[in-house]
Length: 129
Image (tube, rainbow, N blue to C red; front, top):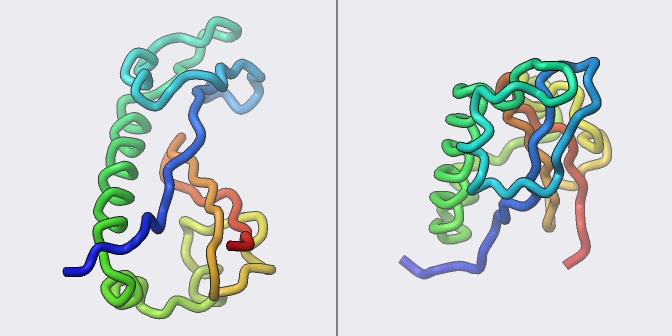
């Protein structure tokens, strides 16, 4: 199997309070430190910062991305199933995703994924090579 260039990059970090009304966040926490935040109370409101389930989902996301990056372009396309914008809009993971309506199915895109209270794709945008 021919190795391809990195296709998906996991970027970003930080933790924030699970309470939607709370504004506490610590954006500089690295993903490798997430385990230290599991079931810890928010310093501002006392709510849980990172549940065990959210932590496990973040670890699963890393495994999925690592797997996808081992695929050849042909394998990656076959797994993708030729998704259309319309089929993505009907997928609950893409509910309320910013930028989905202007997404071009060709070229590179940056995808923002949140794993708090389930996996959600919150933003997607095309980028120039």
